[in-house]
Amino acid sequence: MKFILGTKEKMTQIFDEEGNVFPVTAINVAPAVVTQVKSKEVDGYQAVQFGYGIRKEKNLSKPVRGHLKATAPFAHLKEIRLDKAKDASKGWKTDWVVGEKIELSAFVPGDKVEVSGISKGRGFQGVVKRYGFKGGPRSHGQKHSERAPGSIGTAGFQRVFKNMRMGGRMGGDRFTFKNLKIVKVDTELNQIFIKGAVPGRKGTLVEIKG
Image (cartoon, rainbow, N blue to C red):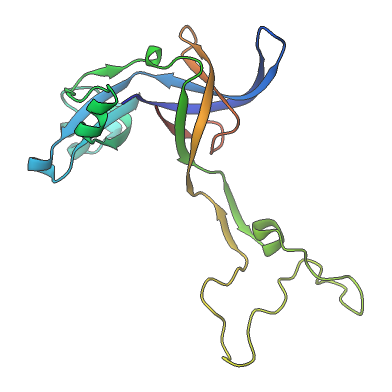
């Protein structure tokens, strides 16, 4: 298993030796440190918990402070489920210990990765922006209804069905993009460049899994 945490920086483009251009997302990364190893006997499932980003110890709650006393006061904690039999068949590491690190050097250009993060929050939006509705015609007296949703009910049942597409909160959801390609790994700047877009705004915490 290859796994690391980072924060989204920006989008840019990279040229290869042949002059081909690739749109990429730059992600600032730091070593992911193992903070807990969960087992099926104790916790009911197998997983590894990682810490990322340093926070002042006084800003952590006492339970979290005690949980991290063996490592460091991390700002973020994320865990990955383990399947030791499956990981061993792929040649991945299965015996993790607290304090162990996964460095950026574990990833190389050409690797296919899975990136997860929280998308940008858009606030309350109407149906035209949220779902791509066409809207109504600005004719026959419909002066102010070009972005209205239109009819939402039905004659026979006299009610609005569940899951009707209407205006509401948009964004702020967790997304996972698979089969993204690593174009460049910069170990000096601690940045990884992934082809295409990844979810979130600048500064969003993202999980990169190989």
